[in-house]
Every structure is written in C-alpha cells, then in structure tokens.
Length: 109
Ligand SMILES: [Mg+2]
View 1: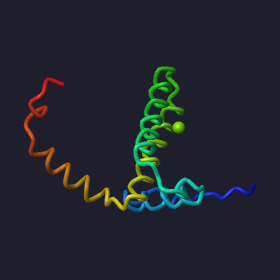
View 2: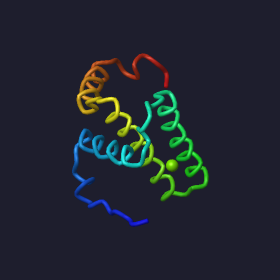
View 3: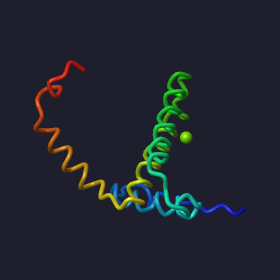
View 4: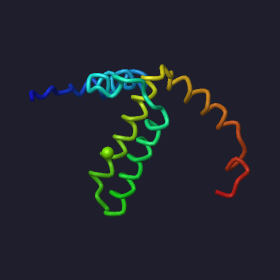
C-alpha cells in the first residue's frame, strides 16, 4: 500500500470549514460514507475518541492524549462536512448567545 502524505499547509492555518471539507473528503476516500451514515453511531464515535483521551490522561500519556483530542476534532469535522454544517457560522451564533448569558449561566459549576 502506498502512502500519501498530507502537506502541512493543507491543515495548518486553514479555517474550520476548510478542515471540515478535508476531513470529510478523507473519510469518504476511506469508505466511511459509502452507505447512509448512522448519525447516532457517528456521534458515539466522537465520544469514544474522548474516552480514549481520558484513558491517555489517566496514564499521563501526553502524546497519546493530544492524538485522541485530534481524533475527536477530525470525527466532528468529518460529521460537519457530511451534514453540510457551516461550523464557523454555528460557532459564531452560539458564542454570541453564550457571551450574553449570565455568570456561569446561573449554575454552580
Ligand atoms: Mg482515537
């Protein structure tokens, strides 16, 4: 199997929407969208990446922790690409709402 390397400039300095398109195109190339995607399953796979990050944290394995955080973003960005979510616009709108909420949103933690 031949290896295809990404170039750093395909990732670094790119917008979230650009990364979403890239992550989704890689996932499509690898066949993860060949059939209709089960969105619940895709969401739970994001959670599994967070669980892997938690395990790495418990073992104080920083490189593995960082990799699992990256996996989490990659899965989320792939999902955004697959569902045509403009994640930059969604974050903009939600951050604006959050900015106008009260201290700790009225909760204790
Ligand atoms: Mg992982």
